[in-house]
Length: 398
Figure 1: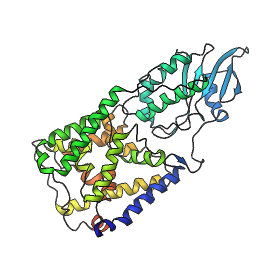
Figure 2: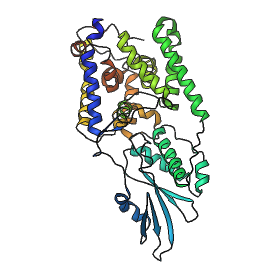
Figure 3: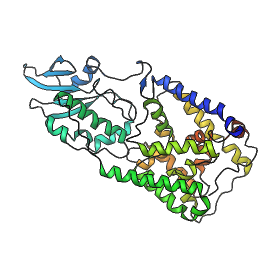
Figure 4: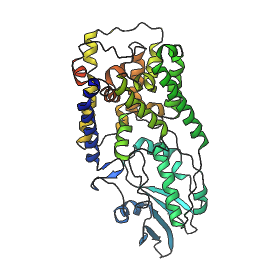
């Protein structure tokens, strides 16, 4: 019992930090704490962004809509604002306010994005792929029935836009029928991802029996949890959950990963996620298996290096609490699995550490990973974290 009680101070400390981050951003688990940080756009605030799209035109407010008139007084377009009707719909960084431009024939001309907190790389990539143009030329009914697939890797963002389109257009057409189409590809991918989690759990509890299958587990993690579904833990995800909460129904894979990654280290004092589920950790481990002469790092040097990830975590957390606007995805290599949306910084970090992994055993995991440092605090008492006087017998040396 004592080994569990000794962790209470650091668990409370971690919870306090997360709550403080929520208060800094004005919301906690999708509940608004203050409105000072909200980027929700109303019609007057958005006019200066709209005017360049309709030069020399005049505007007339009609509820949550604007009517645009040509210089000669004829009808030009109707503008539907997604806020505040779609206030409950969140992307990766919160609300994604935009305007739906309807022509005289009630056909969608284009979408006008308003300021938001989404990752600029993802937004730009979606634009380049024509995602925001998917409804152009369709009338309201056709747009409601149009099946637009969420873009893998920026699922939060694209799903939020799709749902906002449906909700806002349904509101406009006074339609109360909301269609939900099951994405069979996503369903199959989730099932296989669930099997990978089960495989990891069996490997965790029956290490010796499943040791011979470890390479299959590593490849499965890289392919399914990394490149295909992008279901992995990161500081960006943790920050998202603290601010917006998480849908158990739609994101049950990451919910399971998070649940086991927190509970198992607390109960068993053994690392689960970093050793058995992290796709980037798996990538490093495979790289380390290449038949190349390894660089040996002395115990003393290793102890010093292992402190870097805690300092790195403290710096990022401090900047976040201080209200500094950070693109958290760029501080870790995980988004490189979705390289088309990742920043060059994230890709560079990933490449450097994969190359280093050929010569040094899992350098990112052991010495630099702030997410790993956060999870490690759940299984090691603070004294062990600060002193590192003894070799940690709890580490899995697979």
